[in-house]
Image (tube, rainbow, N blue to C red; front, top):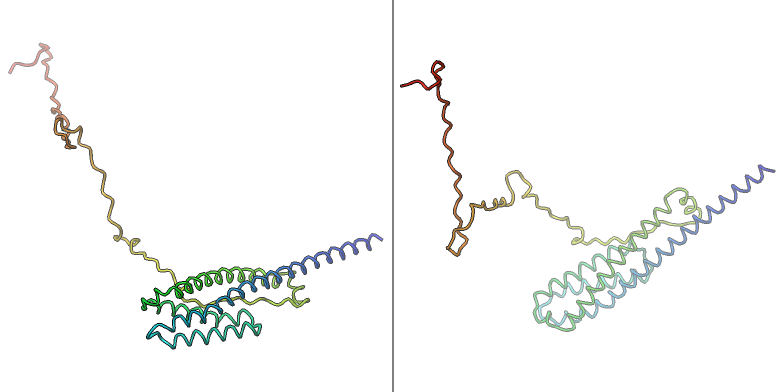
Length: 246
């Protein structure tokens, strides 16, 4: 009887652990899907801004038509992938190219003063910059959730339940942004022996009290007194108790 009770307790504990592991995986998967929906919202906002931006820039005389065509093509490709339900890892490449193409438009637009003064262009540029910031923030949050979810699906014992119930690993949304991946340049010139900033000058030496009656900060040096050299002890004649007569 006691053996059956022990077995029953073990079974109950295992069932409770299994339920906890399964529910944890479900919560992370739902959190992952929600975070990706937020990324998708910001990406769609950018899709809506691109046509208006292109039409505004197109009016600038001499603007590179090839750059505008590239942006429109990438925008249409990215939107088609979003409509087909492509995975985040598959969409990341196209989205990264679109970000770079939009950056090229903004950089090239700096050479057109009339375009910079256009109110519509200024408003679209501001909206696009804000959208890019939101995309970056949403992407970082989504990738953090992906890391937690993937760790849950790979770590023991939750990996057993993940494989049993079909929980697949999530894909990161990695955008290849050269500006973000550029290495930070550190200058170690001041750390080489013999090279560095100029030495700090020594503090001024005080030479005594200011001269009286000058009205300025003129100071007179204090000369220490000269001590006389020590004199030898006089020689005493032991017979007379007096110094010998020369």
